[in-house]
Amino acid sequence: MRRYLEVALGIFTSIGGFLEVGAIATAAQAGAGFGFRLGWVLVLGTVCVIFLVEMSGRLSAVSKHTLQDAMRERFGAGFFLVTTIPGLIVDWLVLAAEIGGVALALQLVTGIGYQWWAFPVAIGSWLFLWKGNLRLVEDGVALLGLVALAFVVAAVRLHPPVHAVVAGLLPSLPPAEGTTYWFLAVSILGALISPYLFFFYSSGAIEGQWDENHIGSNRFTAIVGMSFGAVLAFGVMLAAALVFHPRGIQVERYEQVALMLVEPLGRPGLYLFAAALAVTCFGATLEVALGRAYVFAQGFGWNYTLNSLPKNSARFSLVYTAMIGSAAVLIALGVDPLALTVFSMALTAVTLPLVTIPFIVLMNDPAYVGEYRNGWIGNAAVVGISLLASLIALVAIPLQLMGG
Amino acid sequence: MRAITLAFALVGAVLLAGCTRSPEARAEDARMKLASWQATRRLLDEQRARGDLPEQYVRQVMRAVEEGRAQALANLRAASAP
Amino acid sequence: MNLTRDILDQQVVDRTGQRLGKVDGVILELRDGEPPRVAAIEIGPVTLTRRIHPRLAEWLGGWLRRHGPRTDGTLRIPWSKVRAIGVDLRVDLVADGTPARAWEDWLREHVIRRIPGSRQ
Image (cartoon, rainbow over all chains, first blue to last red; front, top):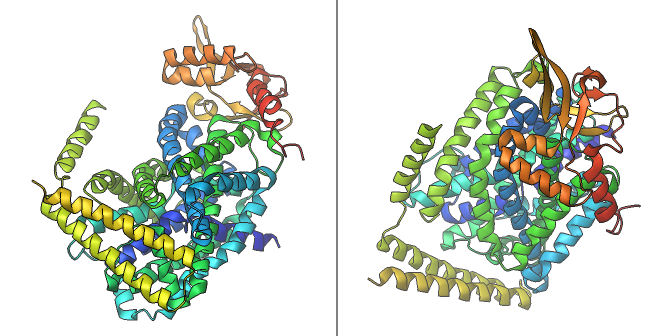
């Protein structure tokens, strides 16, 4: 039973952490704009996430410290404060985008504008955290999130040409629209490799009281869980590539995206899209809010746990409450959810190096990971990822400004 | 520390200098967006004819199409004007 | 023992396993002719902020003393109370009642308790 629940953590982390509004929006835009050509970016992002998630889990299991704990302890308060402020701003924007995703899904089904759904969604997510515990959050969303398989089913029913799909899995240069191509590539990476994912995963490992016996299952859930999420995201890109790209439709509003599931699946496609969007974004709302609360609590040394009453972790509980409440305001005010999503994913890309570079030190420090230090593959991966992260951090804003 | 900040600022300035797109590029972009919304409307009509879509959703997409076209037309006018 | 490595920014845990905070500051005792000795560790947001910007720390301390539980939340723990240094720093204290808990307790009583569902 325990094993099953641990695997659920992995799959959930991919549903709320991997496949969420950012992945859906950027994959749909990529498929619509460039067909299968950006497939390699999904592969690249997935590989990076697998390495980083596995390392987050291993670090926590062996050192009994979460990633944020270890970052403050190893690099000092200055580093913590300097990295936590941009992280907070980005998380807040991403959280608003996720709430927007759920609100939009409800609009699609009811016809009532997404702004009206902002606060109900916020209250619903908050209640889930206030009354629930981590296991409920993990398992509940993981099971509901299986509805996202609709993207894969839709893609398959559209008969994708295998040759073209596989060709897209290899890196290629853009045909013409260079800046949009690279901007989308950067946004996809920002959407897939999200810092809140690692903070959340590592906190979950500590709340689940992992130890060295979990190293194997951690590796399994990192690989299988993230790959599962990647398959879902790939389904989104394929469906968009097969329905929108041939018609010259560019994705600019979520209302359009639902059409790509209706084409192969008929009327149920609309409802499946709304359900998948709602569940994945709901999961992400919980993860981002919790992730930020964990970062604060661990950075400052407060009590924190979702597995007991809120009154036992007052400051921790108030952080996620304040985050959700304030982020909902953006959506209630009518900020465009898709534009907000793409913007926040690009910003996420800018803060990535701050999270990936510490891994290089932590995963080789015997004080933290004991004899489970990174081998040469792990080190090559984390150095490579950090270089990639630094590169995309540099170009993300210019690309956005250049009209991405 | 100062040198690094300066280097970043320089790189940023160079990149930003190439940021403003030419009016032709923006006009082309707006035309593609117009075509995209037209195609969206066609797809919507096809699916609607098949009975695949509830009316309230059709209204939402039509509204999105109108807003998208209006924005693209405005961009086109702005890019074409001297 | 390396101060910054093994003590500063480490998690402090009380006798019952409750988290007290991070070591935000270390108080050294300077002695004539002998190496300095660790006199105490300090936990608190003002101590932490002082490491970044002393003026900001003063302002923060003033604000904290004027609101809520009317304390700036600084807790100084004499080195003699430190029982173990490992994954966490264990101290021979109970967290409840200390200034480090003041804001947590105040927020619990005045904010959390007022929100429905916090007690069941």
